Length: 241
Ligand SMILES: Nc1nc2c(ncn2[C@@H]2O[C@H](COP(=O)(O)OP(=O)(O)OP(=O)(O)O)[C@@H](O)[C@H]2O)c(=O)[nH]1
Ligand SMILES: [Mg+2]
Image 1 (spheres, protein in one colour):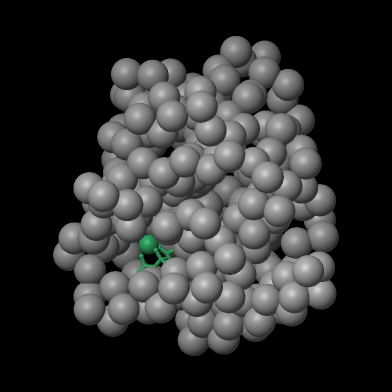
Image 2 (cartoon, protein in one colour):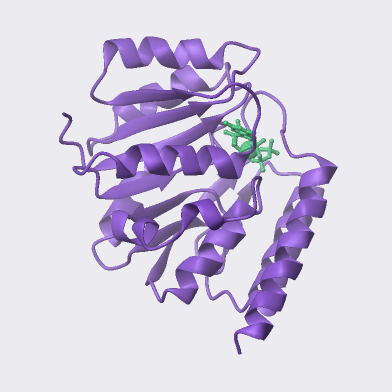
């Protein structure tokens, strides 16, 4: 059994151009971490590329294969359960595979986790920002953040970021199977639940970059589902007041 305390979950769907350099950079960080790739049977072979890393580094790289594209939220849950099953893992991180989340920020996120139970790699705190992103993308993220902060009362500045660290206890305190968002809005929903449970949330500034290779997986449908999630959580918040 591996003794590594931090594992980072990387959900993948068609990330063949990114997965090799990403895993290489994660394994080369000055702090020793492990990686859990959750691949949804990517047609471009991302899953078997990850398997090659797992064969070479069985203690440090794990791969969960799912039968088909089932959404980002459920991929995170599969990764969370895998990590929670290993008692030695105390910190569970999530990041995108496309280099929007640069691995170089991970040591600072782990350092802040000595004070906070959740750490977000954040675009919207002093020193953070976006590079090479389209105006449309920047606008959409800002609107989503403004809505979630005002309607849901979320205190974090970057509420839609997928670059996060959770202490094991945080994920153990949340009924993962009751989360209704299966896609991108999972990130808002789980943050809402974390804040309700009064966990301390810290943010590390990051420069978010547009994906290096490959294409987006966000569909119009996901944007609509995101709006429905915000509305549902808003009513839940009203009812609990
Ligand atoms: N396993 C799994 N991974 C997914 C799924 N949808 C997206 N991903 C992965 O989740 C991460 C975020 O998806 P992206 O398409 O980069 O979403 P985004 O960053 O908001 O959009 P762009 O970077 O503009 O493409 C990437 O690593 C994707 O490969 C899914 O249904 N299943
Ligand atoms: Mg991306």
